[in-house]
Length: 91
Image 1 (cartoon, rainbow, N blue to C red):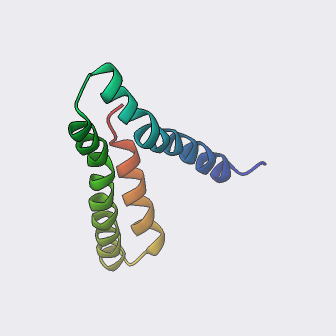
Image 2 (tube, rainbow, N blue to C red):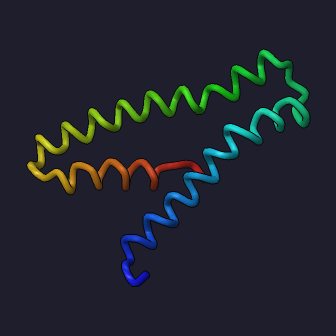
């Protein structure tokens, strides 16, 4: 309970979890009911964030591996990718 790292991880997972739940459960309802989009368009637009998530996950892994080789530090190779990706999200 006294570790700042644990509190930081809890906050990060809380925010990321909220965004993930919104994308998988509320986004399709919003697009269909409030924007009056067709079912096909709603399905396509609802799947885009998940598809881009797959691409960014693979790209982030490759970038992290490259940074580890370049910097020689596994700690900073992992931290930099996570830090930049979470701080660069549009709010």
